Image (tube, rainbow, N blue to C red; front, top):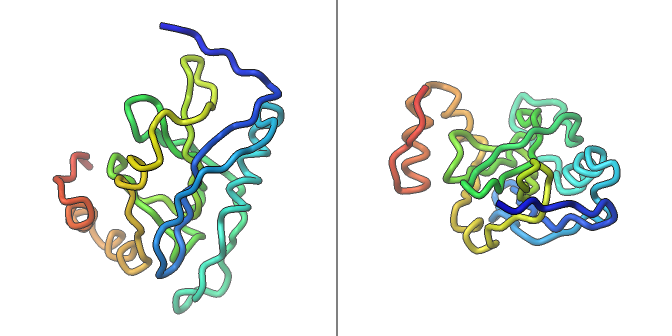
Length: 169
């Protein structure tokens, strides 16, 4: 196994996934210059830049925050590629996406990246066409149904992806 070192002055090349209310997902290549200096702040800044407040707001919801305050990472491919995503996604009503290899949808924008053997964030190995094939937009109505009962998650997943739901509760 080869150890890959990261040059602190290098840019991070990533793919952004932007869900939008009642529109197709936007999946495009992006770059964060000199990412490896203050990388946490730069991740939050990029997630904020790509997350749009929902329009229209669902009935009964007064305020929905569009800023990202806390983020997480979810690996979706065996090669280590995955998403930095907003960990407070329930505040992102109407803008969700679901990846074929993950048990639940993501809210707001997702930054698709890779990781090296040291666990550092690097450019993804998975190509943009494969990523696009494995993504689906999720609307608020579907998300509401998912919250009603766990069986709904399996049903919606199987409808979206045409394959059995492989996770267990």
